[in-house]
Amino acid sequence: MIYFTLINKIIELVPPCILYTYFGIYCPGCGGTRSLIYLLQGDIIRSFIAYPALPVTVLIICRYLLQYIISYATHNRIKKPVFRLMYVYLIMTIILINWIIRNILLLKMGIKIIGQ
Image 1: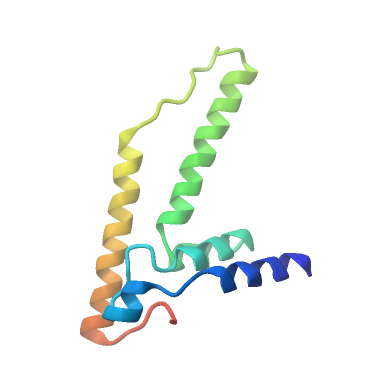
Image 2: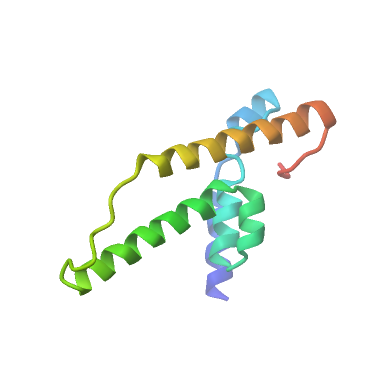
């Protein structure tokens, strides 16, 4: 019960999207809060649909942390994780493609992906 109250409080604190409110287009971050809420509820599929970059980012971070913990536990016999710029490019590409597709669906076909 407390968990759902906390999620409702998070939703109330998030202001409406300025780009959507004033210009009628989605911003590159639209859907991020909804994705986080679905992820916290354990619904990975809906989280990915709401904002694909968030679950991918969490997966990359978890992989990094797990590899770091294993390296620490084995006293560096297994190498520490290395920051890879490729992951940043991957996440930025996902955000850009998601933003373009959602705005094309909204502006050209009138399909609202995110309920505002």
